[in-house]
Amino acid sequence: FAVNLAQCDQLEPCVKGGPDYECFAQVAAALDAHGLPTTHLISIGGWDAPHPIPLQGGAEWFQTWRLWNNALLRPFDGFDWDLEGNDDPSAPSNHMTRAT
Image (tube, rainbow, N blue to C red; front, side, top):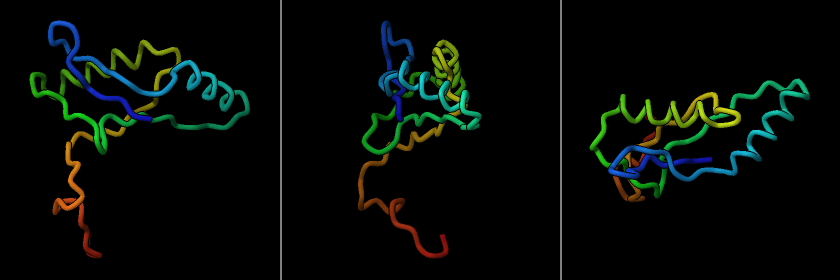
């Protein structure tokens, strides 16, 4: 699952995209009901995702995500903050040595 940080009305930061949140809440409830403790994460950004416009700082983006997440029927337990914005397979940062 992944969401994107975006600019919405009057350039206000917002969270867009993602899975079917009602389905997610139902699956999470079913796991809980069966006594299967599970940590549920959402990825922000990632490969081929738009890089957030730098009109807001990290604290503002986190607050935007936190408010969005807390408003969900079943909030996520955390997130993978994947904002580097690199989609070039030949970029040096996409090649790792054994030492890495």
